[in-house]
Length: 162
Image (cartoon, rainbow, N blue to C red; front, side, top):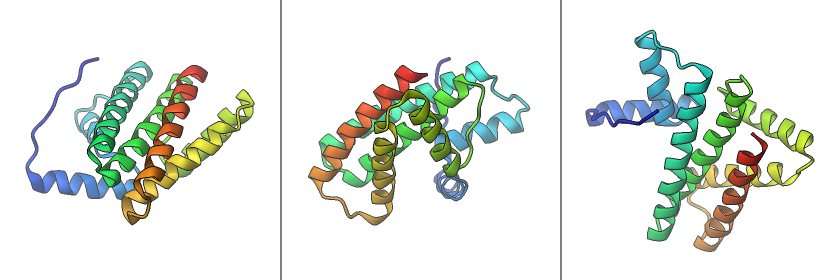
C-alpha cells in the first residue's frame, strides 16, 4: 500500500487536528477513517495493518528529525504517535481495532502479561509522559532523549511480538 498526500485548506487541517484530539486519534488516522467511511471503503484487516505500519514508521522518522532539531514538543508527540500506531498495528494483526486511549492500555497490559515482558508497560508509560509533554512542555531535552530511547526499544519489542 502506497501513501499519497492530499492538500487541505488550513481551516480543515486545524479542524481535523481538533477533532482528532477530541476523539483520541492522530490526525492522519482520523482523516483516513473519515475518508474511508464517507467513500464506503472500509479498510480490510490487512489494509489496516499496512496503514498503521506506514504511519508508525513515518511518525518515528519525523520524531527522530524533530529531536535532532531540538523541537522537543513536536518530537514528544510524534514519538507518542509512533507508539500508539505500532500498538494499533499489533492489534490489527490480531483482528482487533483499538479506538480509545484506554483500549491501548488494556492491550499493552495483555501483551506484557502474555510475553512476560514488563518493560512493555514501563515503556508505554514513557510514551504517555511524552504525550503529556506535548501539552505541558515540561520535559528538558535530556529527559526527552532518554524517553525516545525507551520508545525505540518499545517499538522494537512490539514489532517482535506481533
